Length: 214
Length: 109
Image (cartoon, rainbow over the protein chains, first blue to last red):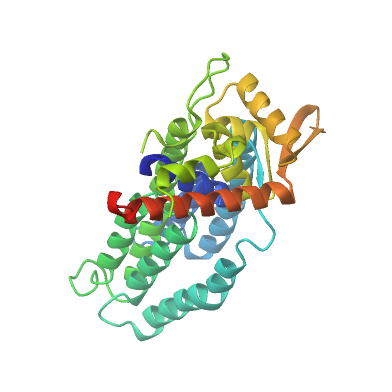
């Protein structure tokens, strides 16, 4: 079996096991909500400080509702997959026991200690690469996103943001942009892997169809 | 030691057919998937996919269940225990074959 076809089958396996994570349009409303949060918390924002939490909760609620609607659209357009119970147990354990605590500690260090570098930048970079690898690989745009987060580490040193709140606001902006652009690119990659259905009954190479665009 | 080409004959033809291999590979990565998902993933027409699924079902490698989600009829496809074992065995054979091909020299036969 040619290597190209074996790679296509590996991709089929990876996408099926991680189908939820490849439904990129789901992430766009969440990205938009984060961008609103970053904008409303910025120094030039016209939003009064007392309204910011309410605005964040309201936009996040709308974003989650829209994201769920998009999820139903994916089911109608691309079909549904039920994962093997416990398939992501290791990933979930690592996420809760290592990744989230590391992100929290990094954020606390940046807010409380206000070091000359943004510790959250490099921590988010590692978390995003771990996310990409653990959810089926591919999606090389996340490598660029990781590099952008790693570069953000030096934003306070380079004078691009003040240590503490200013740098964190920049981080949330980048996170919101990453969700939005990354989501669009995830969807584009999903569309390339899932060819449009040709319902005329002519034979087509299934494996070539699944991986032909790569 | 047999040449890698001779080992090709040992492969399960039912599973090795490209469309069915793609279907079984996808199903091995999940508990179940619906017809639309398999159709989008393989790019097969409805008729072709149905035909491949019927063959896999007849061989006892998958189970097909039809039901309504709201008012929409849905076909759900689930690999059986034999089906999971067959695809795992098949991938193992392909891996061995690949390895044998890399190591094979005409003198070794």
